[in-house]
Image (cartoon, rainbow, N blue to C red; front, side, top):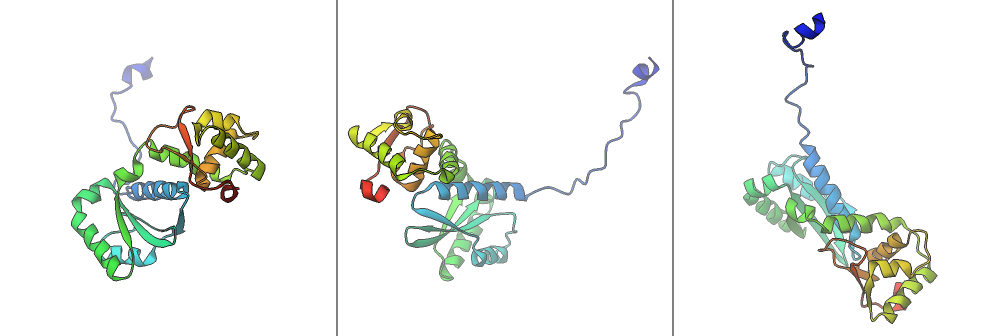
Length: 210
């Protein structure tokens, strides 16, 4: 009872936490992770890792290692560097970002400036993550052909659910997404992925897809 009466009357003691320590790298790390996801979900793109040259140029422009997400990618036969900037830096240091791109161009790098909003855009990011997760799923030649036959019989278009039902696979939906990752099938990444989402056949022959 005594404790209940006096509770809250004495000043509270709080644990000493260093207020100056802020994890500024979280935004750039999340930005990099999501940008890599978008690259991995693209059938013609590959993630090549960091770009040390552009990293050093960014440092020379006053950007810290926690400010930007810089990654090297290949798209087809081309090589490019993506400079992804958090929203705050995109607006507050736009001129510096443009100068960084120009400096990288003089150094022989083909660079693209990408705002955080473009990387984080939904539902494209969620769909890309589903495609990326399905990259490790094993799909046999016979299973691929079963889906291709289903697509051809339906005029090159079907639904996500019907494609999954057309294949004998322990993870049928992931198997369909795996074929999207290969570029055999195509889905609209700008709309939310649902069982009745439209799946289209890419302009590739069955021999190429298998």
